[in-house]
Structure formats: C-alpha cells, structure tokens
Image (cartoon, rainbow, N blue to C red; front, top):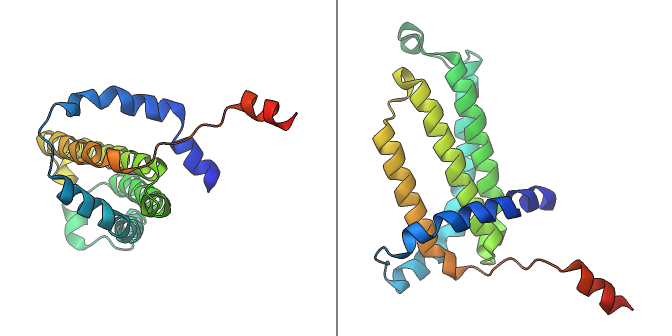
Length: 177
C-alpha cells in the first residue's frame, strides 16, 4: 500500500499540483475557523465516501454484467460499456479515498494529494459520462464547475497539511560513516 501511495504522491503529481495552485491563490479565502472544522471532519467523510464509492462501483459493474439492468435501461439503449468504465473508475476512486483516510487523519500532505488524485478520477468519470451523454445526464459546464469548486476547496485546505519530506540519499550515506 505504501508503494501505491508513494506513486500517487510522486514528483510528477506534485509538480502538476504546483502549476495549478497559483490560479487559486488570489481568490477570496474561506474563514480559517471554517476550514479548520472542515479539515477536522474530512478524514471521516472521505472514509465514508470511499466505502460508498466502492459499493456504487460494484453496482455499476453489475449493470455492466447485465444483472442489475432494468427493463427501461435496456429500452433506452444504455450502453453496458458505460457501466464498465464508470464502475471501474468509481471503485478506483473509492480505493484512493480509503487510502487517504489515515494520512488525512494525521494531517499529512500525502492525504491531501490523494484527495487531489480522487478529484482527477472523478473528473475522468464525468468525462466518460460525457462520452456516453445519453446515459449519464452530465454536462460539460457542470463538470468544469464542479472541478473548479473542488480545486478551490482543496487549495483552501492545503496549508493545514504537513509537507512531504523527501529523504536526501547523500546525507544518509554521510551520517552512516
């Protein structure tokens, strides 16, 4: 699990985040007490959301297999391929949220980055929904608006998490001598 978390919080991910952050720096900030409260309950909401996402994803996969497709879904011509992509992405998002629980509880930056990754997975799921727009009811405007709100809130939370410490290999070698 720590290898998965390490890859999701790798340098390319943090560099991408660093490129996005300036766009949100100049916006009005939420009250610090509100952000502190939201940060304190975030691990629990994220844990619950992870479990619900996994169950929802399993439900979508059952539709892909045809077990849960109701007669109206078949009549409307809903594509089972949509349920496959959406189900896999929903489960993946749920797993990432569950991985974020402990780091968020300890207020580690890795948890915050996993929330960012979860937001990207959610965006991807919405874009898949747009490809199958006759099935999902999504709109491009709603997807982009949700992304902007999610990023705004994430960047409001960022200062409450401890930065990731990257070990310097050369300093470790010199300390062993």
